[in-house]
Image (cartoon, rainbow over the protein chains, first blue to last red):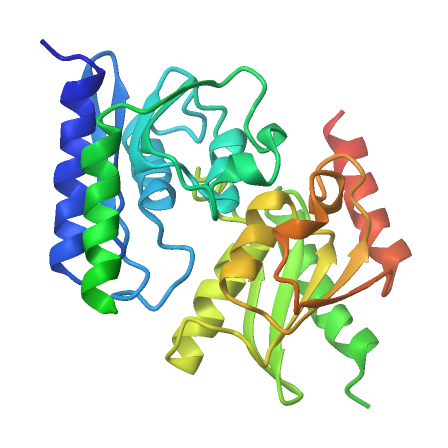
Length: 144
Length: 144
C-alpha cells in the first residue's frame, strides 16, 4: 500500500543519507499520482549553500520532471517541518499538500507565520514523527 | 564613488536583463568590501523554477566565491523588497546588510513577519525606489 507512511519512509531514507554525509538529517520526496518524481536531502554543508535544503532541491527537481514550475497536483513529504524559506518556496510552487514528520518549534515556518504557505495547501503533520525527530536528535547529540 | 546608489544601479542593470528576457524584473548584487562578488536576476520562467529568484541565485553565487555559506560581511542590493523565501534564505546566510529599492506591499517579507530576517541584519529601503518600481510597473502593464 502506497500510503503517507510509505512515502515518509522514502523521505526518511533520504534523511539517513544526509546523516551519513554529516548534513542535518532532513529528507524529502515529491509525489504525484502515487509516483515519486523527486528525492532530495539536505546538502547545505556539501554545497556550502544555505539554500540547499531538501525541500528546495525537491521543488526544483520536481518542476524539472513536470516541465512546469507549479506543483499544484503534488504532495511533498518531508521529515521535519519546513523552515520559512522552504514554506515560502512551496507557496510559490502552489503545492497541493505537505506531509511532514517532526515539528521544529525553533525554526519551523509555523512559529513565524502560517500565512507563509499558500492558502490552498493542505498540511498533515506528525507522520512517523518519532523516527524523524530521533534522527535529528542523534545527529545533534553526536556533534556536541 | 561606490555608494549605495552605485551598487543599486548595478542591481537595476540586472533587473533590466530580466525585463528583456520577459522575467519579472528583479535584479541583485552582493558586495563585500566595496567589491561586487555576485550578480543575478530573476530566472523563474527561463529555468521553470520558482526558487530562481535573483536573491537566491546571488546568495548561492556569493557563497561559491567566498568558499563558505555565511555572508556575514556582505551587503545584498536588490531592486525590490525580498519575498519571505528570499528573506528567510538571507537569514540563514546571516547577511550583514540588505539594501532594497521598491517596496512590495503584496509579496514583500515585511507584510508577513519582520522576524524572517536575522536579528543582526540591517535593512535600508528606498534607494532608487522610483526607478526600481517603474521597471516592475511597466513589465506588468506590458503583460496585460
